[in-house]
Amino acid sequence: MLNKLPVFDIQSDSDFEKIALKIFRYQVRHNNVYREFTDYLQINAEEVTRITDIPFLPVAFFKNRKIVSSPPPYDTVFMSSGTTGMRRSRHYVKNLKLYEESFTRAFRHFYGDIKQYTVLALLPSYVAQGHSSLVYMVDTLIKLSDNPRSGFYLNDSKLPALIKELDEQARPVLLIGVSYALLDLLQNNRFQLKHTIIMETGGMKGRRKEMIREELHENLKKGFGVESIHSEYGMTELLSQSYSKGQGIFSSPPWQKILIRDTEDPLTYLPNGKTGGINIIDLANIHSCAFIATQDLGKRLNPEQFEILGRFDHSDIRGCNLLVL
Image (tube, rainbow, N blue to C red; front, side, top):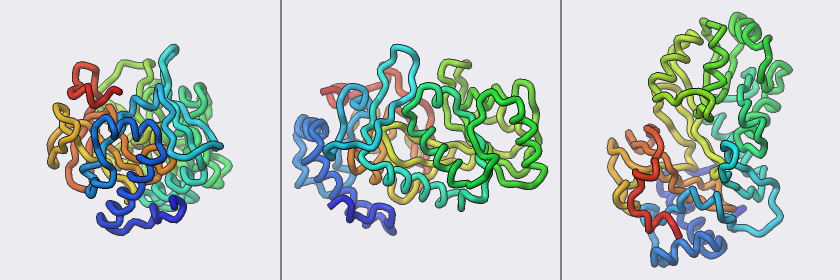
């Protein structure tokens, strides 16, 4: 049933809702943790007829429960990044080809053919910890670029010269990196780039002081000499990414939707322009859970675009009885 759903061919909100409801009912039947959660909320799956009535599983469940809607075997288990001693989320991925289709289609949707880019990656903490969905995605994009200069660059002293050389040759470059690694690169280097996309994936990972997005992007714009900073928004527990081409305004591919929940009442949704918790429907996540309540704060600007404004701390969370079983 799942393999026949046209998840990546959605043309309308009606298509999206129809497929989302089918996946919801399937996951309630086959995902033990999600079924416990919906039972706790006293929700009858057969009576749910709108996506706004679907309950969203708190992302924290991935840290201590096995969230699966399909039996083994699994192609891999992705794990979230984290400091020493921190419990890491685990995402059991049934089919890596599904993940590859999701992120390659999404990249093409927003940026065109990957073969036109040289992909330079600065993801040291993710590479070191292993089991990273981000590293898997970027590694696959590097291979698909079919460019001998694409690759992971950690402490490579030749990287600044390579970036300048490629840009001077008017070669399209995607420099994708965790925030602190991009800032580290700028400690001893300054650029004036015209053909390079700088894409940050967020996170200081304890290496530098945290800063708000506007401050981070201003520092990166000045250091790289570019007009805008692009961003990638994804997480271990999902199989799809959203992208921003500047000003922190994100868009999702057609098989993903963002809803903003009320921080006082997790089952109530807020209109455009209001700040609340970010809920994500990721229809590519058919083998685990497609309906995730994140720990991020944000707001929708319109049905197609949203902003990320920060993260909950424990004192921010309301309706805790709905977030913990």
